[in-house]
Length: 252
Ligand code: ADP
Ligand code: MG
Image (cartoon, rainbow, N blue to C red):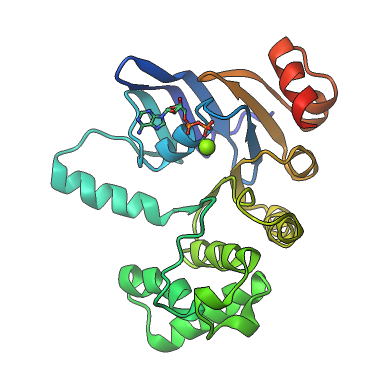
């Protein structure tokens, strides 16, 4: 590990729903260009942690930083709205369900946010849509509606849409787990390409072989704590914790 300042820095993250402690003092530092996988059983707090990064699920304690900006800053309402809108433009998020706008063509799905938030011209928007869709292999479907696409194609459009905002970091929450098995690889390939381009990524996944092949670091979470973390070859091949071993026995 370098002594560089982390790009994404989660410090002592805590989250409770009533008496249920979902995150118990989580620390996660991600360097620029690093790819981190988060694995762990259902209910261990992976989605909550990911959603805390852009303050969709605000933490009950701790801090989240992106570069030199604290994301979960306490601010008066109007200032907070301006702050968080700015922050969310810098963080691309892809969920299990694609959440494309069904009434918009692929092109407009990709350009809606940049048009509204960055004031780009129609010509710039067209160029942007073409570039991003080409990147995910969906240029030919630019004028299709989401209902005319397969799940894997929709997910690739969702990735293009996130990339169109030129984010500093991409968060993936089980991006392939709702897909038919034969459609998983096309989405994984897009994520691998982003990895080769050194996009900073935090990837929640249940696909161990994918995590092993693309990630620089793996975090194993269970019951709201990081049980173990390290390079993929250590976590997957030589874990120290019994909980990690037990989980991997079921999932490898
Ligand atoms: P994972 O993504 O690892 O499956 P989650 O982060 O979704 O786990 O959930 C962690 C725990 O938090 C679970 O016990 C879940 O039931 C609980 N939880 C998540 N969201 C809420 C909520 N809005 N209200 C109450 N409990 C919640
Ligand atoms: Mg989840």
